[in-house]
Image 1 (cartoon, rainbow, N blue to C red):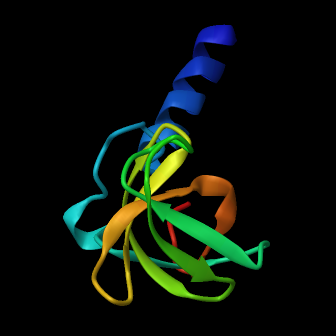
Image 2: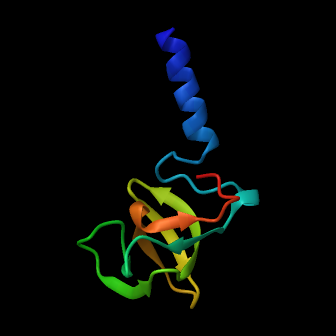
Image 3: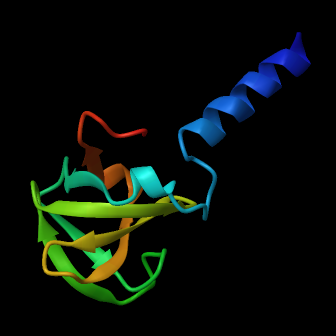
Length: 98
C-alpha cells in the first residue's frame, strides 16, 4: 500500500510540473498568473530574497510563468523583464496545471 501511495504522489508531482527546476512542457509554456495576496511583490534576479530586486510588481499585475525552482517561479513580467517571484505570491489562471 505504501509503495502505491508513493507512486501516486510521484505521478501527481510530475504531471503537475512540480519537479523543481523543470521547465514547463512546450504546450504549457508561459502559464498565465498574477501577483496575488500582497500589495507588492519583488521580481528578483535569482531564486532568493538575497538576490537583487529587478522590479516591484503590484497586486494583480500579470506574469508569464516559465518554471518552478524550489520555492520560486521564473517569470516574465508584462514589460519583458525576467526574474523570480516566490510561489506564495502568485495566483494562476483557471487553466493552470498548478
